[in-house]
Length: 324
Image 1 (cartoon, rainbow, N blue to C red):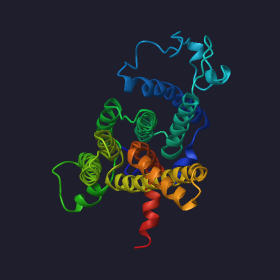
Image 2 (cartoon, rainbow, N blue to C red):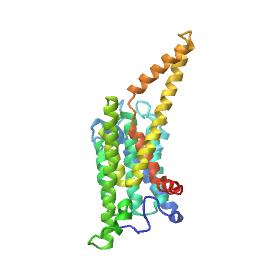
Image 3 (cartoon, helix red, strand yellow):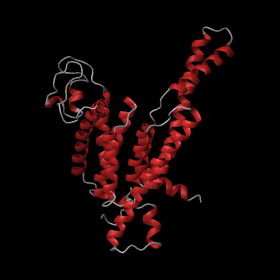
């Protein structure tokens, strides 16, 4: 297991002194390559297509993409975001995901150094980033990402300590009949399982309450599996922080959407109604209809806040704890 000093997702700032520019550049390039593969996953998994075969091709002209046209970032820039053969536009999303994955890998190395923690959280970031963009585009959270992530998170807990509630409080209460190293691994595994169970239960319960209140499904099982994965990687405290911050971000987004729709519809109806108050009432009713029928990709907010919690969650909780 990793050094006991490496407790929790965030390491000591002292580890940043050991960042090697050669390793940093290599990890960034590795991230770009994984980002290129992630684009394949985001496109193919919702369609039920293998991410291995067939090789990448232009969706419009079906021409296979040559190796020199499949270089992360560079190929998109050289081709100016268009297919070499039919000149069809290639979404900037491909470029953005490659860069984000590269920066995410670099950020993990910057925070965790050349340790197993970097490997663990690079895998976590890769999966979460894929789920964010898949949910944003298709409103789906593929099992091949969420369940694979859940298994990885639980497995990694045996080698990279989660160090959450069980690891902090159980050693003084429960003495396991094993050596210290094995006991630490078991406590970490328990923390991972606890985070997965509570994260999934929280979202499942919220979805059940919403279904009974509104009579329509508010969150699917994809969100439940996503939070089980987040809990397995981050533990209970950061999972709860993720859920609450994602709920806050989602609420702000929803209210902002309603406000924007209301303002636009008010402007539109003002041209048709002489009474300004009538135009505002009609616009407000229209905005409410849009809000009721809009399926918010909540996985986008859960995933985004999980990444924020990974890098800043412990720091925020320590700051918040000073007030009590």
